[in-house]
Amino acid sequence: MQTSDMTAKIKDGEGFIAALDQSGGSTPKALKGYGVEEGAWGSEEEMFGLIHEMRTRIITSPAFTGDKVIGAILFERTMDGEADGKPVPEVLKARGVVPFIKIDKGLEDERSGVQLMKPMPDLDALLSRARGLGVFGTKERSVINLANREGIAAIVRQQFEVGRQVLAAGLIPIIEPEVNIKSPERAEADGILLDELTKALDAMPGDDKVMLKLSIPTEPNLFKPLVDHPRVLRVVALSGGFSREEACRELARNEGMIASFSRALLSDLRAGMSDEEFDRALGDAIEEIHQASTVKA
View (tube, rainbow, N blue to C red):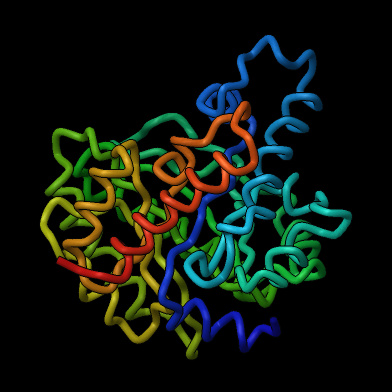
């Protein structure tokens, strides 16, 4: 797929984006969910080798194709790795799946009710490498815990600063200011975030577009103005700790939002499954998430 093909697929594709970007801190938890306990590896390299095997098994499964999975977000090591002897982004594109890369390096401590992204001093080099591997876009996550307008404005400001750097490198940023679904001020935070994102989008120069990855709002269709905004290529939803059933039910109530799930996609997969069992479980999860992304209640 060329860039124009990938842009069209992300803009209009009938499907969802798989989040396969667990990083160092979340990898042990992801492996445990997959049935691999911490004692199964003796070093960080072995741990990342095991998670790469899991991701390779997913993206090479016959259930994982561009018919329903229009994109996949990768961890940096996965992007740099191989599947079936070929670079992972190349394998994804051959299957009709648009590759993205997670670029943030984790979160700062909470301040003003939010957690900003840590500095990314090597971002330009990462973006250049990603572009060379045929990656289409990036994803960068920060977290909103409380409905603090000053904090939320700071998160949006930082996200769009990074987004401009990504756009300058020829990639499309997925801006992800996640609202913690356990926040006691979740609904109010959703509303403030909508205001701040709208202001930032309206202020964008030129004709560049970004993507948004947002928590499913407490009020259905609250983010519809963002879905319809001329500077937004696509709005995707994170599962945020919901079970797949809960996340799909809530997502189906929001017009124009498609899934970008991680745990909700992978929760039924186990290392000890036969290939037939694995492919069936993955296919069932893909079908359920695809339905919630494309058939709205």
